[in-house]
Length: 61
Image 1 (cartoon, rainbow, N blue to C red):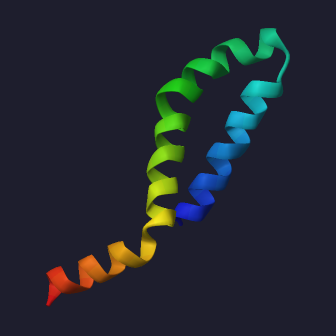
Image 2 (cartoon, one colour):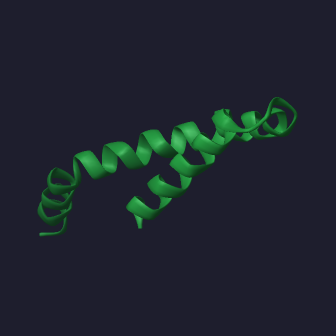
């Protein structure tokens, strides 16, 4: 699930960066508030996925 969110957020970011200026202006606010934090969180989760799973396993037992 985090991979899908990460890929969709990256697509939105790429669209906002490469869209013409008139179209991208309203999209840039969404990118700043939603997309960049989502990319950051999902990126860290994907990077540390193994450590997070072992931590969750230790907490549950």
